[in-house]
Length: 127
Image (cartoon, rainbow, N blue to C red; front, top):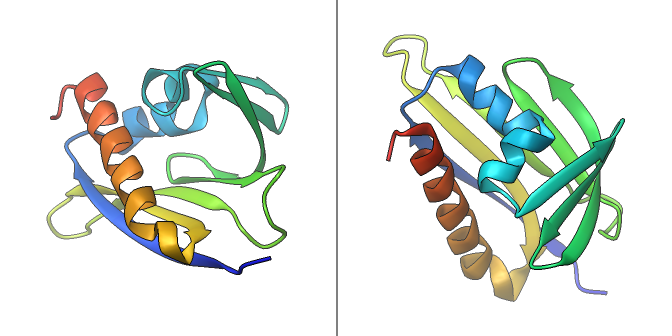
């Protein structure tokens, strides 16, 4: 099986870290921008897009700062992480996305994240 490649993206977001965290860490928040619907049972999250379901395990959660998921069907060492970064001097808030995909799908995957973050900004009113 082909090795997945890791990539990172950064998106400036005009929002408070506390509000942003609600949108990246809760099923209701994720349903607003990341997937059509999101359900969770403890650490197991079910993401639904156009009727198709993908399950991910919440690996790590740091209040107000980050969430890290691993797709159940994914490869052993792959995950996706959404991290809130606040610049100490300017107090600017950014989202750092870390994800993995096949080498020939990196550009497509980045575009998908850009679209999803654009949806998030609209929900937050910071577009």
